[in-house]
Image: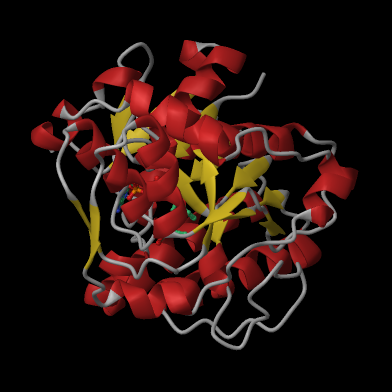
Length: 318
Ligand code: NAD
Ligand code: AKB
């Protein structure tokens, strides 16, 4: 019987991942953990623990005493927030990973999921259909932390047989919880403005193409990777994952097909330089070959679901 702990469960991915894992494994088998005082209301059906991943002894004690078998470690500062606080971003994004990798090395955990990002790539990476194995010279503190994390995951797998699995998520688009401070957040924010019938001011230029994915696809990929037989998981740094690639102009055109009055204006800020350093699109053929990955949602399908489900009160409540 697996007993799963999701750390950073109150965030954009964590909320939906906990819901999906509980559906699969049962409410009591999946414990949500976050530094936040209170559990997100969507997760109220199962256990919640307040936990700071930087409190190494607390985290170790909890995992050992509660016989946790698997950890999904999601707590991190994302690209835009990390640029504003590089020292803390490096600390949070790296120290938590070592705490969990060491627990697995000591035999307390049988499996770990730790997410990487398209931010591992940089300005010298081939931008179109970016290969799995290529030049990686990230220029953001977030990207540097993800690249270092990938190297350490692979190292712990090779040296200590730690079963750690990872995906380089593209920008994720969802409506159940808000994004947490990334460069791709515009592609979520745009739906809240469209739904509120307000003009959207985009912080990226209209022709900035980035790899993106609807959250349902990302959650399916995560669970598919974690359920795959260990011998099929041949890449222990992190798998490239594609999805849909679009620019602010193309996503706004897709919204206009449904809401012809929608208006967008462009006011690029510091996030433009981050976006410019990331790929336009991703080659995810290794994920397809090794564990059967295929995305489901294209741009129009995602726009439809987002416009139907975005709740503008979520932003007001933030
Ligand atoms: P998020 O910011 O929405 O959520 C992170 C959660 O971690 C928050 O609920 C926060 O309260 C919690 N947290 C922060 N500090 C903590 C601490 N010290 N201890 C415990 N919890 C803490 O982020 P997200 O978008 O859900 O991303 C989760 C992971 O996936 C991150 O590692 C991120 O780098 C990665 N990722 C996300 C995306 C995306 O588009 N959302 C893309 C690529 C990679
Ligand atoms: C961000 O923009 O920082 C994240 C990511 C792609 O890692 N959404």
